[in-house]
Image (tube, rainbow, N blue to C red; front, side, top):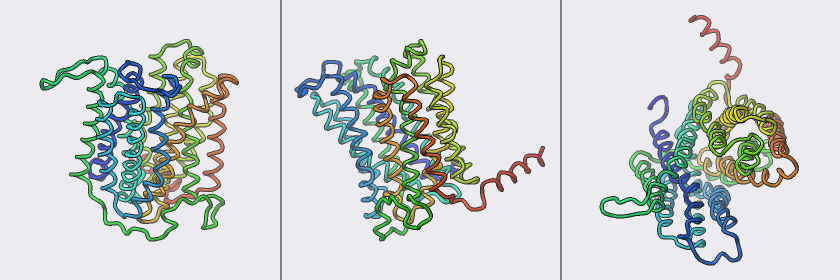
Length: 426
């Protein structure tokens, strides 16, 4: 254990951070690369901006769509580590291949391959984190894993622009452009992740499921405790949460015009969400191990609803920064405890399939959110945010009625004991 976290969970988290750096690099680099004139070839009548959007979206589309299948394959085979390595290997090669791609369709194919590779990495690694954890550490483990992922994702875009603009470079006598340097850095980041997992992570001794229901996604609750399957319900709640937090990105010009600000302040507003999540994700995950998962999920969705609506009503940059920070807090209260609760409910050997419901839902939500705001903004600036607030309210109802607590003896009793202990010590 390191700082209360299993060493292998910490290794997986660090590996996820390294490949997230490389992935997020490309969010900034690819549009610049397409616009630089280096890329050529037929566009089949699509404009450059639209084709760039298609290339960027291909990653999320393939990644989200394939996660349930990737998860089921890892459950069926009964091993996780080889699939983590498979995904990281594909990612390493794909990131390097960008330096050789000179046509739009080559970039599209590489981006799709990236999505396929990461689908295996995410499902297998999150299943490993789940199986390396216990009921009393799962929330903290999920929080640590997501914190490192967010750190990597946040660092990448900041460094990408600097690397591209600083080129050309000469390294060990080899000259490369800023774009090539960025692609090589992304490839090296994935390769570092590959090495970390190879050396420091092993598959735990877990009895694999032979139950067909364990490797399938249930929608209805077959135990008759509610109408919907609780893991599926958590996936829907995660989808609604992700839609709400992703509304902002597609309507940046409208946000900047309303708040009378530039791109720098918009970047700060966007970063406020990530920063708060990085700070609170692990503590909230650990708290859910003691006080229960469901209270945090419900509280997060309850906070998310009015805060999302408020983003459509604010009139000053500092107000938007505050709203985004609160939105980050709400998202942290939902995501790690929801993954931990789903892990609690999952039978041995079926983590890949079941947890893919939540990771797929989150990925789809981040893709649907910008589309929804881009469409709804025509009806008025507050409308996209009102839509996100309504979805969060629906999420509250679904979790409250369809999801039960998995931590026995926690909740208010533990909280009161802790308060009494603090009073006694003071």
